[in-house]
Image (cartoon, rainbow, N blue to C red; front, side):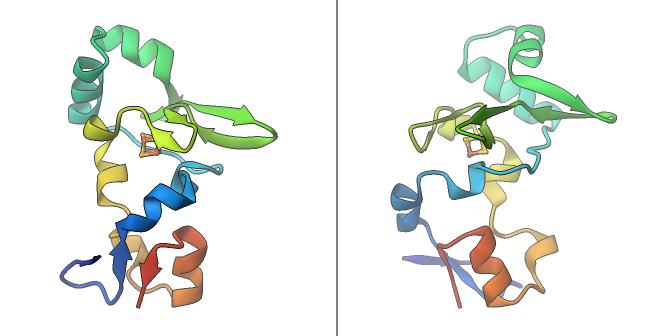
Amino acid sequence: MCQKHLGFNYCFDDSYCKICKGYCCKGEGYVFLEQSDIESIAIYLNLEIEQFIQIYTRKFYDKIVLANVKINGEYTCCFLNDGLCEIYPSRPSQCKTFPFWDSMKNLSIEELKQLCPAIKK
Ligand code: SF4
């Protein structure tokens, strides 16, 4: 089923996520973490907050972002494992809300499909 969101003129077929193996989790982008993300992922991983920050995050200016790893020359989120998110139930809000971001609202279908092949008009 293709999910719709108010104010967006496209839909998102999440059944595609099983096939695409984390297309949106690869590349050189950043996953910015809110304090609530940090707390919920640390709990999910059974880590102290400081441990989680030290092991799985990096600073990007004054923000905290998830760490990336480089595999076969390609950057990928540190939690992507064999195409699946290891922290899916507690994934950051930036991941939960993708691909319904305000910054994507006015993109063409060609541009949207480059960001996520599961987007349909
Ligand atoms: S936290 Fe999970 S959903 Fe978010 S980029 Fe990393 S692997 Fe993908």
